[in-house]
Image 1 (spheres, rainbow over the protein chains, first blue to last red):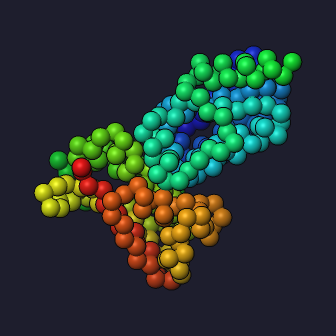
Image 2 (tube, rainbow over the protein chains, first blue to last red):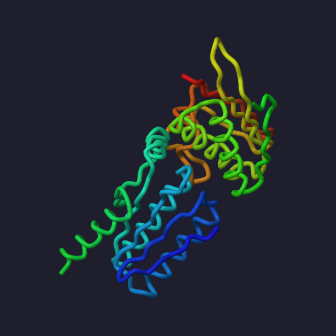
Length: 120
Length: 134
């Protein structure tokens, strides 16, 4: 299942619709990075509200996405990690170190707008 | 309520999702709360991932078990892959031979209540875990 990527001004928004396979996650990674380059985006929001499980592969891929986009000079925010998913991640020992997170889409956008404002 | 064993063949990354969805459904059927169901689904995802990464193919068996006055969910992940030469090392946090996981087994042990592993080099690996309803 492909993750739709929406362009809204300087920001790209990728919203998970369901559980993603490893192949889907890899596709998202390359798709997002390509679009950040093409649209010269300054920010990316990945909405994982619909993600049932965040295992080692998923969190590693999200970290990679954020770091690749950082190298393009843009910021990534992961939003919508569900409380029970967060609990499982902590017990499993997974972190999203160095990656910004926010409660939901609205707060993610607010975070990016604040970042853009301080850059001027 | 299903009393038989549910077996899920693990041959690809798609099967990882199928296995954890079946595990979550069974956990819900047993009356586990949303948090525990997610812990169970996450453990299944990691175990299935180990099969795909190290052995390519294997199986996950899910079963309702009865203990001392309580019910639980048993998950057995088995493969006929290369096996783990040093189990103690594999259970240490941060250890990985495929360079990708590193969290797998010690993490799964923390997610579940019971954890057993048997492995023979060249013959395969079986990881059996259980989660009890509290």
